[in-house]
Structures are given as C-alpha cells and as structure tokens.
Length: 145
Image (cartoon, rainbow, N blue to C red):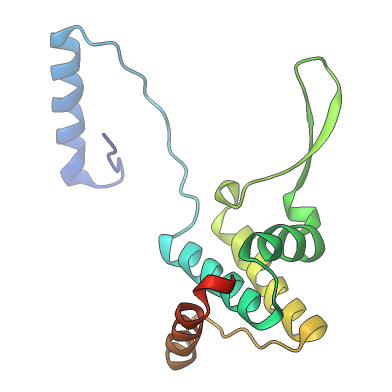
C-alpha cells in the first residue's frame, strides 16, 4: 500500500496497517517513494512524440530514442554505470527515471528541436485546441507511426 505521511488523516491508517502486519507475522518491505513526474506530463510527452512521428515519417520509437533522447537530451539520458564485471558502460536512462524538472527541460528542448530541425510546431501543454487536433491527427495516422 502507498500512504502519504504528510497527510495527518493517513498517519493513523499507516499505524493501523503496520500493526496488522506485525500481528500477522508478515514479512514486509518498506520503501520511501520519491515523486517522479505526473501522469499528465508523461501523456503529454507521448502525444508530442507521436505527432512528430506523424509529421516526419519516423516511427514513434525512432523519435523517442533517436530524436528525443540522443539528439535533444543526451546529457539528461546518457549515464555511465559500472556493470557486474566492474567495467564502465554507457546506457540511456528510461524516461520513467526522470524527475518532473528533468522531464520539463527535456520536453522543452524537444519542442525547440522539432521546430528548428523539422519545422514542426509542438504545442505547449496549455494549447488545448491544438492538442485535440494532434490527437485526431495521430488517430488518423496510427498505422504509420
């Protein structure tokens, strides 16, 4: 279960839940969850990626990896890690690992890239009518992206 410890109404529920787990002799794992980014931010990103794919002829996967991650946001996504053999390897982070601030920066860079490199305008999150239009375009071109 997920509880918000800042909410005073949930604090008692947390204590009750833990007491029940202790009484039942359960094996538990407690993890601190850090807020990543909102579902709406993730949906907005995928909408932009799909629309850019529609407009350019790339697949959504190509846009996400080649354009969004590698070309626009390499320093955000590229990460050097040590593997099990002790060797340093380069990997690309998943967008699910980004914070809200990192995702905001990455999306803004992608919007700028789309206009500069391909002449494709990607709407901001508050351009509701344009967002509806691109949803319709994506639906019409679904088989191609």
